Image (tube, rainbow, N blue to C red; front, side, top):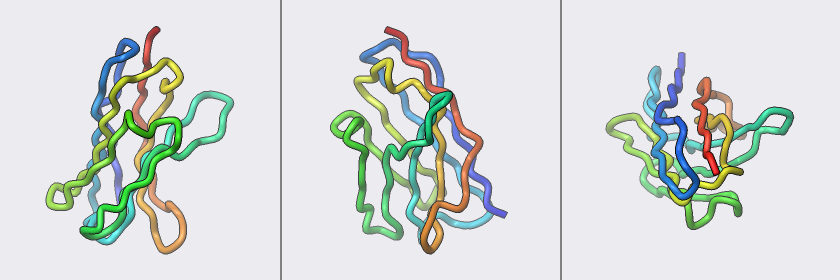
Length: 118
């Protein structure tokens, strides 16, 4: 059974930084694309960033976070990170880590709250 556990969320002032972590258990993350998503009340969950499988480390970002957020992975530690810099109030959301199967993200963490004050 795959489990994903996010940590690192919290309250930060606009312009500040946070680093989210996603620890995976149950199977190694090396063969899987990993992603971060976020959701605010009343809105659809939205894509934030992803990083490719194995050692290709191909990354993709939502336009709203390009240049401010950085996704990385440590396969040996079975952990994925999201470094968030220059945070804005509109980045406030619950952030979710997810693991992609053959065609879709099929494992999700429980989320960590990020609140950015103005």
